[in-house]
Image (cartoon, rainbow, N blue to C red; front, side):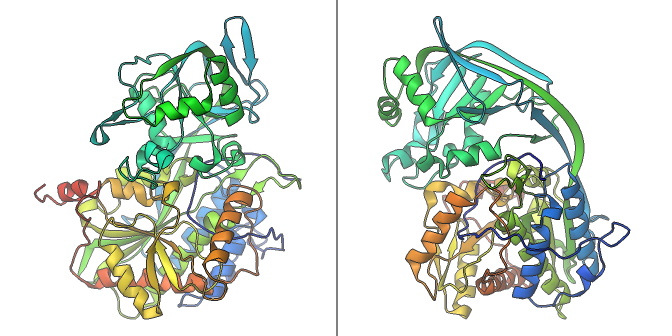
Length: 566
């Protein structure tokens, strides 16, 4: 019988995952430690067999979905550290582990209460069916009583776009209600924000951050599948159960007290009570000069929490450079997934995270093995980092960015893997964050060796560039490459590949059905990983520094970190 929990957000991957429960290899010997045979069978080259083997183990039920603070975390960290040691990778700054202090806050679903009040009328909200809320304040009890509700459009303050949804409205102590994504996506106008492509202003993380800066007591996002890029089930699966955050000195006091989502149906009823419609409110919100307005209703909530403090860890290993060891190329992938949570219709409640992101970790291990086995050692160091708590808001990578093992000004570039290609050989490979930096040119050059093209991601409206760990490194100026498997299958064509992508998001993303399938064709993943190795190796052997393009929002941070003129 399986048990329960879960966590957050999205990756740009595309595969129709068939749920496949097969017998995983024995991971422990009779003493409960990792079998040494697990470490001894890998090839020095990147192979499909090794990728299958790593994914099968990491996504097995025995690893319980790899959530922080669980036995699954312990097994995962041991597995990664033992592999790095067996490969001959060196520890970074004396250790394979970077301790990441986290706090876990779990709301009691049985005592949860939330409601919207208008005059004498009270609408009770059902947990997970109508609303999903949590707190990042380290408190055992959060009580909110009759907080005035205000519609703030998209909840954006963007001076560079001459846009301020809060202008003229004091929301101190109030509950702000907002739309997901940004006005550019909502209108399709290429002159508004970034047009179809989501900006960071469209991300839920930004919206909660801005609500905190504005002094709101609570922030509620209206869920709509298309602009969110995932269904309501992803919201309930990702934000129920234990919620994690980095351990901050103020214990989250600077955060809003309540963060959450409501369904579109709840929002429609709310706007109807306010004498308008969701459609009319949306139409106002996309107009420049939008003015926030009171909804004439109040929000109440009661959260009773269990709080736990503990350390998770990022796992690091290094092939030290022979000439400039203090300069490094970074490869990264997040090892965590959602653990155990609400059961699906079949009764399965282990969120195995095979594609997201056991597959990316398998790719990281294969690249590390290849680098460690290469007879010609790199001139610059090659560092491999498996980060924790990505699913809770890029926490492991945020901690690394604040406490980098290699200083940002000495980190040449970073290559991130969040899901790998499960669909076989592709005629192309896509870049998430097209036009950001010169690593794009390096990938184009490398792809020619496989007779492949490099294309922009097909769904920039999903904001995938802001949804994975490379984003935290970009914010401190490190040039990053985040590529995704192509959408032109050599065997089946583009429409087929896009259909697999859509099916994964619909059927398996952040669900128990994201399970290992031995029938996956990982030959295309081998091709992609070879390209990542070529790009990284080029800079590990070279002396140049990749650069952010003019106009990138991350260029200034790089120039500042390297002491160059702005």
